[in-house]
Image (cartoon, rainbow, N blue to C red; front, side):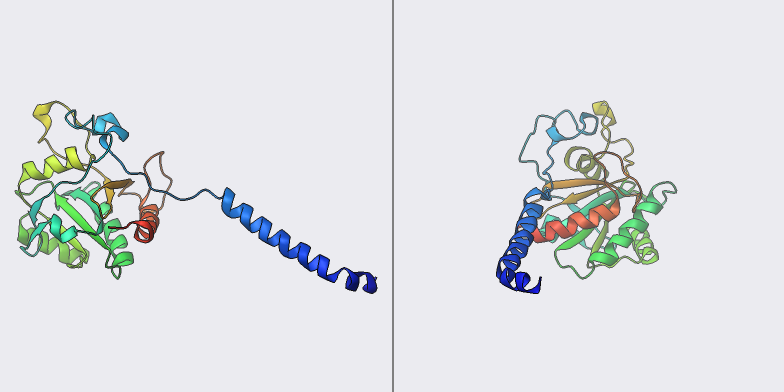
Length: 232
């Protein structure tokens, strides 16, 4: 028996090596390749898209903006140029979904705080109440890192316009309702080219998800993937 094994040792070794290579090759060929879609208004539930932008099937970008953050600093698109970022909409006096959203954004901040490619951006939907001083107090309570996470206030119409026509996160209604209260649990992932790459339930850290809406841990996975594959 040993003589037979020695005789065919080279053949057996070659066969084992060939099998390993073949199985590995099949695994990588058959394994689904991860990819993140680029969302345009035409790709999103029409209920969340204002009628004036529903026709856009490509080349949808987050437009320039100008707001004021928790430190009284003017924040514009230039501060996010070439960055991957997560945007949401909240208000400091909210007692329903916002506390969970803020806690989950803080969880996310902890995991991306040393990644220079990633930033966070939270827009107040009650800017008349959420002054700079109010946002600063809130930021301190929630452990906001100023260099990573901007809580912004500003012109209400500008904020609501972005939520409805750019980030596509609020159910639309009559044109007269454009500036009615914005209340959404969505976190929006934006790439370095100002394109939307995903929508996530900001109240759901790691629980079951509905089709099309991921949780915050999945958002972190997508951020990591985007950091490796997104080129400014």
